[in-house]
Amino acid sequence: MKLLFSVLLCGVLVAGIHADAAAASEAQKIEYLIRSVEQMSNAKFIRNGDAYDAKAAADHLRLKLRTAGSHCKTAENFIRRCASKSSLSGEPYQIRFADGRVMTSEAFLRQKLKQFDRRKK
Image (tube, rainbow, N blue to C red):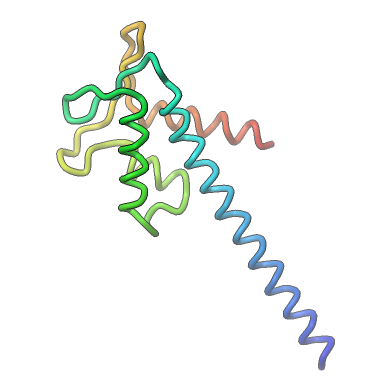
């Protein structure tokens, strides 16, 4: 009986460690995405018609992430719920690059997430 209990306890502990590692991995992905925005010194981030620098954009994303709480446990949820559009107006966030190109933050962050996933393989 003690052996069975020990085996079950080990299984529960391993499952818990795996869940913690998965959560840490998602948190790492989210932080990678925010830092990708924060490091774009030659881009402007358009939110509700106003342009912001990279630091202000990253600060805003961190605020939205904190506000979202348990609704944003994965990088996918973060992109969809926090980093794609204004929760006030519903307008998509955009990034205007130094060369004049404009893309949605959603498209940009999805590209960055793919890069992160490729790096981790």
